[in-house]
Length: 95
Image (cartoon, rainbow, N blue to C red):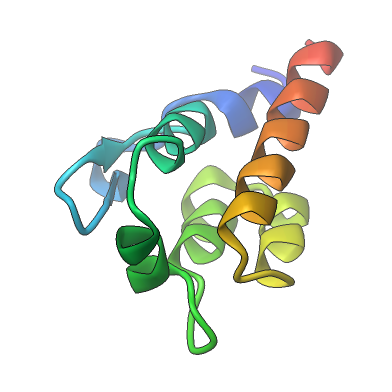
């Protein structure tokens, strides 16, 4: 599997991200889908001035440090979705 394909693939079952609302995320496409359906409150539980759970998960479990770095620079809900969407589009174009 090519490196970019790995960044779009499902993570190991032990590394599935569980959102505060109970949804499970296995890959970055699912993360974007969940972000489009959760509340600002749920988002703020995971991304705030103290932490960015999504960036940490992407760095350690997904293996995309570039995307993690971009996400760490914002706590804005809309910006997070845009960064994620742009990254998915770029990775899909490469495949």
